[in-house]
Amino acid sequence: MKLSLLSFLTITLISACTGTVKKSQKEKTAIPKSDSIAVKLEPVSNIAQLPVQMNEPIAGGDLFVTDVTGKIWIIKKDSMLPKPFWDKFGNKYQPSPNSSLGRLYSLAFDPDFSINHKFYVSYAGPSEKNKKNGKLIISRFTTDPADPDKADPASEKKVLDVEGRIVAFNGSQIAFGPDRYLYISIGDDKAGDTTYKFQGQNLDDLEGKLLRIDVSNIPYSIPPDNPFVNVKDARPEIWAYGFRKLWHYSFDPQTHQLYGGDVGEETEEEIDFVNKGGNYGWPVKEGDETFEKNGDTGKSDFVKPVYTYSHAKGICVIGGNFYYGKDLPQLTKKYVFADWEGKLFALDKEANDQWNCIPLKIVNEPSTPFFICACYIDAANNLYVMGYLQAKDKINGVIYKIIKA
Image (cartoon, rainbow, N blue to C red; front, side):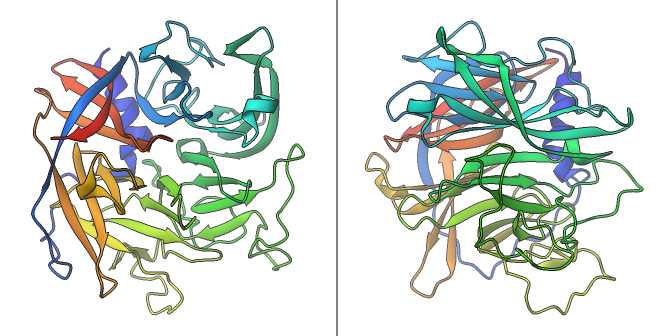
């Protein structure tokens, strides 16, 4: 795999961090730091392409791996099947830093998947109206009635699509919440377009938002308790807003609180606890800092991040999960998250409601640079990280389990 594929991923995910590698800032000291926690990486599987998500639709069953280059793979009994579960485009679109077509961002299984065999994907496709535009598409599929290890390509039902010059670069994640509604994050990253106007504060636009919709009927309906239902000039799909790129979010299995990592632009990365109707500040705010100086920086209704870190510590937050397992007791009840630079951290809430960030020390670091694209926790409370190893002129996708050192 040539480095053009690396450039492809860089635009897909790390365009969120364009130019930030050289923008080191002094590390904040307001939140105390603890000693590191030692962990090991246990190889689970290699993958030829670029894994950005893992799902386990049935507890203890197969693991499904989302590959940003356009495929979904199945890990069955610790072995990856040779043929993809989902492959809508085949080789029609080749990875390119200049095109989003064919990119697959996320997969979400219906809460009743074991009965109805339905699942949803978020991908980038072509526009039928304007060749200069692309589309971010959310569609429903079902498995092949004759083979549960294959998707039925003819079963596609479009749920939502958003068209624009940049929107197809701004796909992030879809997931069902404990309330059985589908949540959709859409970024507000200009992806190199100097004419792009940020939409995070515009409630009449879906970019820079977290959406919440009811897909019990296709295409979808609006949950009646969404915060902007019947609000003039606001899209009723919006659940929260003011995000740059909410790349990975998840729900605390005990409290059901939604939390995630919002990727920064120039100076800061942030972890947010996302609440109904919350305004998280982008593009006026980037983390705790001001981004657009002509924006309304004095607004009191911006929700402050739970935790931020500068680019002296990492350059692209990936997000993570709360851990309640027993195999890694030092991580129990902590939010474990990653940065793209191959770094792992745990946030621990202290008695004063401050969050202490604890680095995780990987004692068996890979011999070549490891770049993390996603974190995951399965039904058995196993923690995983996935991404790719870069060695000279090629990259190799990898999945690791985090285990006790």
